[in-house]
Amino acid sequence: MFNEVSPFVLPDKPVEECGVFGIYGPGLDVARLTYYGLYALQHRGQESAGIAVADGRHVELKKGMGLVPEVFTGHSMDRLTGHVAIGHVRYSTTGASQPLNAQPLVFRYAKGMLGLAHNGNLTNVAELKSMLASTGSVFQSSTDSEVLVNLIARYNANSLEEALMKCMIDVKGAYSLLIITEQNLYAARDPHGFRPLCLGRLADGYVVASESCALTTVGAAFIRDVEPGEIIRIDQNGITSTQGIKAPSPAHCIFEYIYFARPDSTMDGFNVNRVRREMGRQLAREYPVDADIVIPVPDSGIAAARGYAEESGIPFEEGLMKNRYIGRTFIQPTQQMREIGVRLKLSPIREVLNGKRVVLVDDSIVRGTTSQKIVAMLREAGAREVHLCISSPPVIRSCYFGIDTSDEHELIAAQQPLEEIRRMINADGLHYLSLEGLLGLFNPRSDHFCTACFDGRYPVEVPKPKESGKFSLE
Ligand code: SF4
Image (cartoon, rainbow, N blue to C red; front, side, top):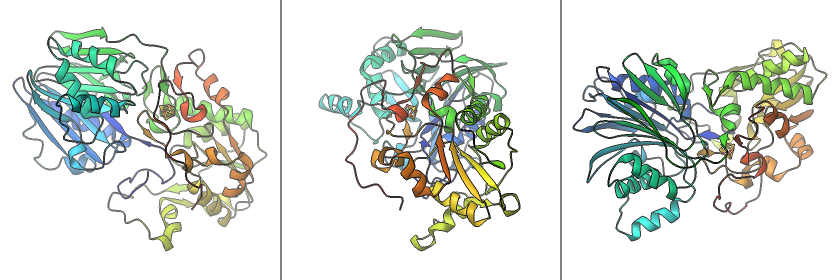
């Protein structure tokens, strides 16, 4: 899951796979606005980036491996001119990390040119690929997104909306999609609304993005979220909405609020920072600890730690400093120097920790390796007690909808009881937020979320888990 090209995450976290950004704006520099939009979504994918621009006759594409500013340098955007654009940032799990799999995907077919950017994972891709291959389709990349392109090309007899409606019947799983033709911008969201997608307005155009933070960055006003199962066309006449497929009860990914999304984003009616703070408050109600200070694991634990501190009355302190300058060129430590990996990213503040009973707040535990190292680090810096409070329930199942959460045999909570995990990471106490407590924060829409990685209740059928291996913290 963690490798040399994941500079922004600790090696023990779920990883978001993609972010998408699209703009329709005659008279605007749509390529540069897309570039800035992708910058705001960089946390959703750091392995590749791309922008496709259409000018009424042609779709031009630039994409490559690396962060947004690494892919788009100097004058590399000068040829990206037009009135409509889509962009994509990617972290790969479906399909290898290689230039061919970077998005947007741009194709020429019977009706002209088409560019596609996809966030999410399809769950029936093997079946669809074999159906398409048996009737003559060829695939250039190993991404599931190419299946969508083939289906759209196959079904587009009358209109792109009609093609997307037919695709929505065939395709299962998670997709927040942006598509450009030579003329128009289209957006579509799967019927469960797994991955976020929202719509904004500029003075002279419209923007669609994975998260509202990207709208804010380019100066667009938030209009609304794209509804589950909805297809939106944006053209010279403005916005046209079609319900592409009947939507069941929504199943928005609850992990977006726990860890992935930027705190300044608001998605499906809930602000991420506010939700995280409430998670911390709820955690403090469920697990009051007799302690001297509350500290977060930065950055994703900060809001929940503040909430815990507010509710418990225990002072909030910054006890760990994060090094924000570990980039792609960071050379991973050798086997003998593994401890350095975490220490480079996080460093304890002895003056804060020495002699203290500490509540350490983190957003999640996946494999437990990082938690173990952080607890050891706090003890070395003089912490008298370390109580680890996690602002999410235990992660016990893999995700099949666009998040890399590791295989089940690597998930510590799927393999070990609570007391054993506490012992393995050497904490004085270990507490997870309850699923009921988490969902209660979204009342009265508590049933609008996917919680499958916590309870195994997948909203759609998923492939069988991979073969189990032996769990180890090593
Ligand atoms: Fe999100 Fe977990 Fe559902 Fe995946 S399984 S969509 S990570 S809540």
